[in-house]
Image (cartoon, rainbow, N blue to C red; front, side, top):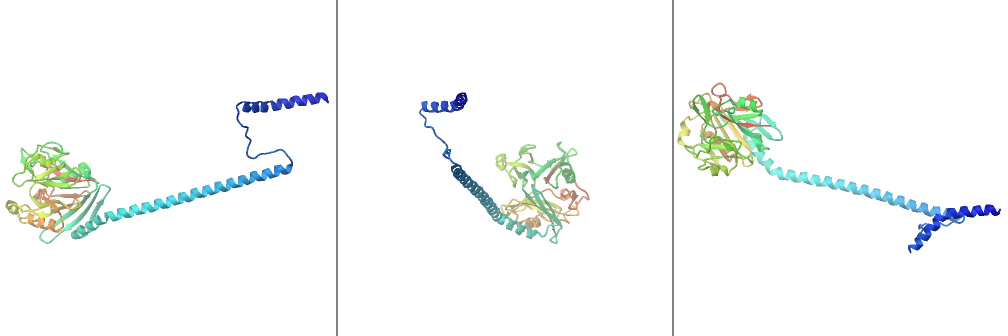
Length: 355
C-alpha cells in the first residue's frame, strides 16, 4: 500500500508539474491568472447540469443573433436592389426626357418628307430613303444621321492622281452601304482631276486655293458636322477642322437663309439632273438627287427649285454638288436614281456612308 501511494504521488506530481510551472511563470510576470467566464467548478452533477443549461442558453442567444444578422443582411441587400432598380428607372426616364426634344424635332422634319420606303440602321448611322416628286421633277431624298463621324468618308479616285470611278464602284470597293457623287472636276490629258480645294484625311490634296468664280468647298468636319462655303484664306477653313471635302458651286442656303444664286448657274443649264446636300439644326444630313434625261436644260430641276425645297424642309445649310450625268445615288448595292447618261459616270470624288 505504501508503494502504491508513492507511485500515485509521483504520477500526480508528473501530471501537475506543467500546470504548476505555468502558474509560477504567470506569477513571476505579475500577470493575473484568468479563467473562462463560465467559471466551471467541479462539484455535484446538478452543478454540471446548470452550467450546461447556461452554455446552451448562450448558444441559443448566439444563434438568434446570427439569424438576425443574416436577416438584416438580406433585407439590406433587397433594399439595395430596389434602390438600384429605382435609380436605373430614374436614369432611363431622364434619358428619355432629354431625348424628347430631339425625337419631336426628328418627327417634324421627317413628316415633311413623307414615309421612308427604305431604311438602314446601325450603331454608326441611320439612313432613310424618300421619294421626292413635287410635279416639276422627280428625285430621291436620303436623310442621314451620323452617330459616328467616321460613318461618312470621301473617296478620291482609285488612289492615283487623275483617276476616276463610278459611285457604285467606290461603294463596293470600300464596303460602304451608300454613296453619292461629290465635287466637280476638270478634264486634262485623258484624266479627271478634282476641282479646286480638295481635302482627304485632314490634308490638302493639291494645297489650298482661295474661292473664286462662286466655287464652294463642301465637306465634313472632324466632329462630324457638315461644313462649307467660300474661303479667302486657308486659316479660315482650317478653323473648321475639315476631315475631308470637295469643291463645286454654288451655296444655296447658309445659316437658314437663302443666298442669291449667280445668274450664270440659273441658266447653264436651267434644268438638269442635280445632287444637293444640306444639314438640319441637329446636324442630320439631307441629300436630294434629281433625275433628268439629259444635260441640255429641258429636264430635271432648277437650282431655285431645289433651294426652295431644301428651305421648306427646314434645312439650315445647303450646297450644290456636281450634277448632270455625274449625279448618282447608291444604297444597299443598287443605283437608286436614273443617271442621264444611261449609265454611271466615272468621277474623281464621292461621299460614302458606312454601317
